[in-house]
Length: 343
Length: 290
Image (cartoon, rainbow over all chains, first blue to last red; front, side, top):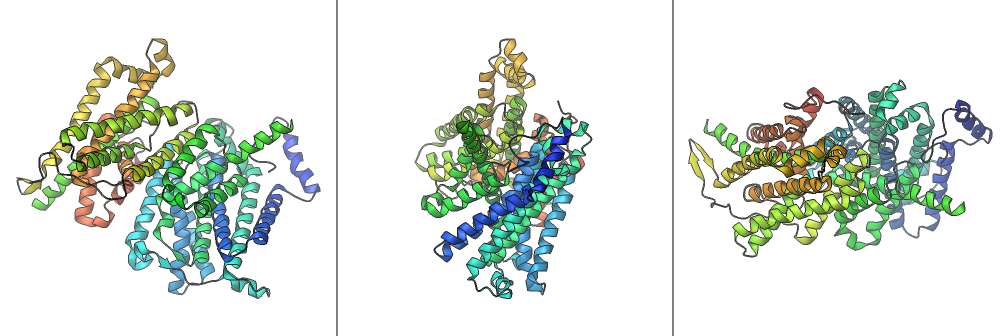
């Protein structure tokens, strides 16, 4: 948790900020590595208690969603920008991974291509829009997401149309076979997804503490103040937008491979809303918020069958209530309660 | 030639709907600075309520005002429960709140009504009128007339009445308005009520032509945004012109390019406007208050 979220070190004393990582380095463990280890322990704990393949599949979904929402944390939590079209980037990653192997391109390369395409698109679209105020990004990404969804559902010759398509290619089991481990497919994907989420979280945490991350958080507090400090605001926002699109695309590619099947709804508006809700509910300022939000909103529909009927009302209600009652989300809210009780 | 005039007619018809949505949107934006992502849901509330009432045998001249009133009520509740508690919140929280409200209303509509597509007969029947090679549904005239009436009403209300001037004063400076004795709370309520009523009215008028279902709100809101942005955010004249233009572009896309992608044209317009002329056609240059 160090170096992010809660309170920033008063920067008047430059040496405090500089001394902190050095002290951490002496203990041999930085905030990124620490986050990675916490995530790794949680992934392992899950594997210890899961009784069946079904749990592994839900667990895989939780980690994939955590990864995607970590991207939202970078954009929404660090910089304070809302995207309502991130499912579009997610779907680009997923569909590239699904489509390209049919043309003889191996899965890992297809994944890379999808991720690069999503990042490139975010760069091209984001730059001019991000010069304007926050509303414009929300509206433009809403439109962009719908456009991507539309192409995915209409171009049936390429994507299978509204019915979706089967993803053939790599299976994570084979990765584990290389090192002599025999795992079921569901278990193998669980470990891969958990590992990806842990790496993603570590990168996001390290980003938060880096000069770029500090610039991003300065923009969160005030565009103008950040600019007066010499931060290239448009460039920094665009960077955060691209990074978050990359997260979404990697998560999408993983989902395509793990599920073996995808539909245009992975790129639909409701999926974009779901990602934002996860971030908002857990607390968009930290990767642990992403994890908690993803865990709750992935597990809830599995536990409550009525959820399906009232999905929209629950998601919408969570967004409104969180924003009016505990604006920073569950994780910071509980952390506050905890520290208050201790003192 | 008759083909083109047919596209023009349908373009103006849907354009008038988008214009009405954009006007409702502009009203809230001007009064509160909030971009209300739930604006499209009012259209659905209007359409679905009217469809349910008419389906239950209520005559249309009673059902229509009731549906508009239902939309208005939801507008005020939305303001009181979701927007007002977060009035001092940063922009990003307000965006999330109105999006959340929009999703919530969508779910509520699905629970209260159903997931079917609804329509009812046009107010003056469905026998098309023939005008110079094009056929016009009588309902189209209702829609276009309705949008023009809304525009005229807003122009009169905001400039000529006490309550309307109160909204304008509240918009330009809430504290100063309160200091000169304007009830700013009432002005905000009023602007949400009016804006919701306008949206619901658009839904009531449009449903015989465009049909409605619980999930079209976001699409409607997005078309409304496109219209607003094309015309220039905050300008009522811009909202009207932008709405008609978006409608025409959409109809031409459907007619000459691909009906699969007619919904895409609005998004392409948004992106082009953002790239080339962010202040829109009639908008003032964007200046930020710090």
